Length: 364
Ligand code: MG
Image (cartoon, rainbow, N blue to C red; front, side, top):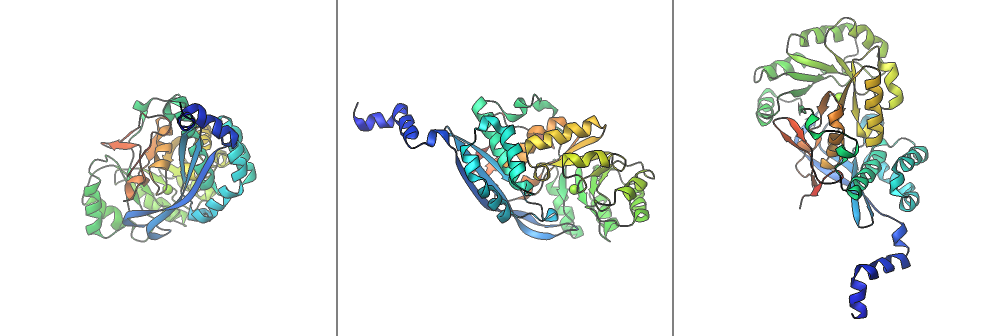
């Protein structure tokens, strides 16, 4: 064996890694990625053609875990600030032992204020790494059954009647649709959808109704339109008013904007029937898992949602989805340049990948 051949073997490579210290540290790649939307996305809050998310790759022992966080404008987060937050703790993350992932995330929560999307990106990459290292898909790590995944809704953005019709045709395989309301045009929006399909709907007002009488009126009207539940009818801080509304309607009310973190859940109990948990609000898979368990312990319904994001983030959420009552995990289906393939959808049902970790494949 020549000296060069020896260096090409595993033994030589391992020694080389030890000599330069790389064996005990990790490589981090942090970048923002611009995801292009298939349709211009309009909600009460904004209208846009793209979303920038934060992508984090964690490499150690020849294994790379991928994570992503979609910063939420509502909470004054953005991808650039998220990237800076990860960079601020780079030396800690490079030196930390990934098997201590819970300890690492507790430390990340301590060291970084806010920036929950950045925390989610770190957590997801670590859990992807751990799953790959163990050789098991993440749902298995959490002791879940892939057969228990719920169906996911497919979101139809507010649009002209003609475009709404086209979007609903594109959503043919989804048995339940999600519709955004919360504007003056609510009745017209629902009527436009109902002119095309009789499928059950889930409706999200994104805090759009500020008057409790109006909220009751709108929800009672929705109750005649085959709607399963209403998400966040009133502003997040109007919990008492929402509780007042809840006493006067029969449709379940789900908290989204009002439910960011685990500590929010107990105070939502009187006003809401359930909570919409998102990795980008919670700060990752571990924290989202904890929120789901707390909500269940309080007798509340649970839902997993997502932001517009790639298959990295959506697949991470999907691995927890066997735990929840409802899923709204279509963020990756709304973009045209997904860097990964992960969770897929068959007749609306979430199909989890069987490869270890998140089970992502890079799209080339
Ligand atoms: Mg929502």
